[in-house]
Image 1 (tube, one colour):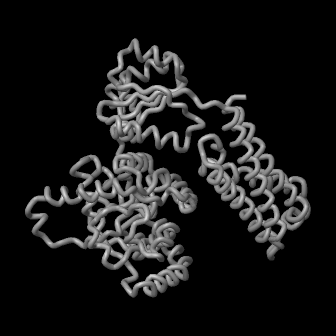
Image 2: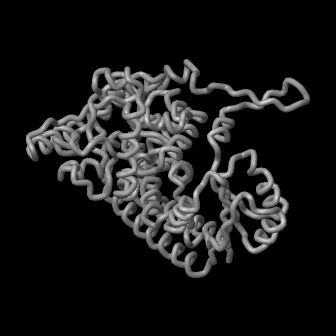
Image 3: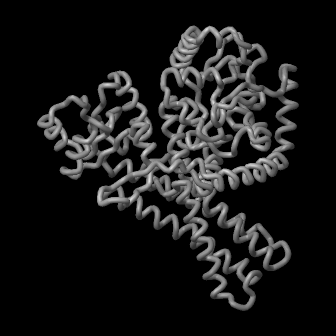
Length: 477
């Protein structure tokens, strides 16, 4: 049985398990309250509604990608998906019946669904890893990548996906056609890493001709092209860049939703924020909040607001990202950083209009200036407002490289929509529970960053160095 048949079979079993148990409990306990006359059509309608909502959430959370996702993440994604569908049908039942109905049967079914999902997912994963061989894979890397970068990329890939890829070959983009074709016959998959689109074509062509699966790391230009639309003005195909993110109607709707959701979350989370403020003050007596200059749309500077998670004198360490076991992080800070509670005050920034609910995470002025000097395209992120959460936060990690974060943010900018904003907001909930999403840079990377910041300061023009010193702290994101 190949890998696709295994995952398709598991997907079918999961659907039958979760929909079947919902239907069983619904018919026995809840159907009579919502449909006291048309019991059979009512049960069918309820099961169909559950299936649609459950499948839609599974699609958002990628809850059926068992082969390429951790068991814990799959189980959590399934739990959110069927849990929301269960809750929705329960609320509808209470509204139709016009009074509260016992939630106990529904709670029992959630436990049964969760237990079965965990067993099915774990069994499928174990079977997959025991019986499905990883694909022989070749990495072809560009001249812009060092051998050390290639090795780190390979290590990161195999750390999570060694059951999918068996990287046996490695070649430079300067490999001859003859040798590449010889190598190609020995693998099922090719990964093109760091090869510009202008030199990628011959490898893509050979892979397609030989029906080989291939992946490639896109250029920034590749991502910008996703913002284009086809125009049939002549018999020659034309692509026009549309600047979708400048739509005034979309911006107005986004602002209205920002005001509504930030207000609601500030009200709901106010008890948590109060307890957090008391804990921070009680630990060392320092200020509760941390403020820092950040860039947002069109390069506008604003003061971002966060709960302070580092010691009061963190600035003596200089400006650098958080590393593993960072001595600057307080005890309370370690908890609120891991749970993202330190970000809650930014709902105030969203309400004021400094930020949006979803968008590229705003970088500090110093970090952004440094990135722009090394990578001018980094300014493209300023085409839209910075966000409380974003594409790079749900698909990347804290220590994702600046270039990769840029490309992830550009994917959002070029394809942004209200539906995508809701999808990112839902995925953010899952990110909170991912242990690796908040892991810091290793010590070596942190030192390299600090050295880059020092070099960047020396390169600043005299008028920038002599101006008013910006507020700098070690509490970088």
